[in-house]
Image (cartoon, rainbow, N blue to C red; front, side, top):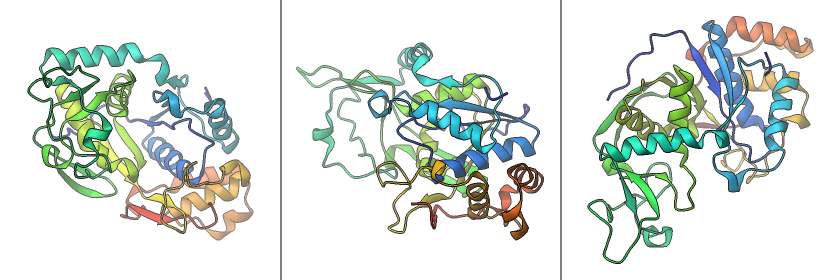
Length: 308
């Protein structure tokens, strides 16, 4: 149809692709889609499609529908209907209530300006100093909700190898509901994956530094932890992540066959030269028969020549 340490998944493989509709599908997103799709199909698993539009101010009208059309044009097939985060706020609210009742979440009055001088965490956010951890300052009201970040999270990434993160030392207590009333990505993604039964998360390495917090949240909510694989991040010649902000060209500007071959090559799959003259169906047949996640280069990023 088009339509607290981690535990090893034991149920049938369920993977997913979850793009944000902030613009057209670009080469970096194609890499994530291809890697997650092929890994699922190689394991005779299901592959789900979710539109991560929880951050409504960043959503571009029509972008989600364009992404779906592009995936169809390139030959991707997913299982079940497309899931939209914007329709799932009730599930996120219920999860936040569980965190509150467990004493894991608390209101925070701090503004971005007040935190601007704090050290940077791994993902570029500001490390929270714990200002509101033991209660709101006198005369202040809560604006956001944070989760107490404690302990060390260890996990083995199928591409990037063994990872270890001290939650408190890295980022400190993190936001799960923002001051503008929107739920944070960290909470939304773990609830969506858990409720869909996702067993394997294959995505770009730009999200590697968020994984420890997601594993932490899953533990607090007593949900299973999936296996993770973070693919190299496609960048332009200046070392910038391919994105709308860096003017990455849409993959619709390129032929699907050439784009898929370029993505396979980027992921270390070494497709034979003869496939350059092959129809799209034959490229897909080769890719599904020869996919190997162990062949993906163990690096955080690489230049995507010709796709920026």
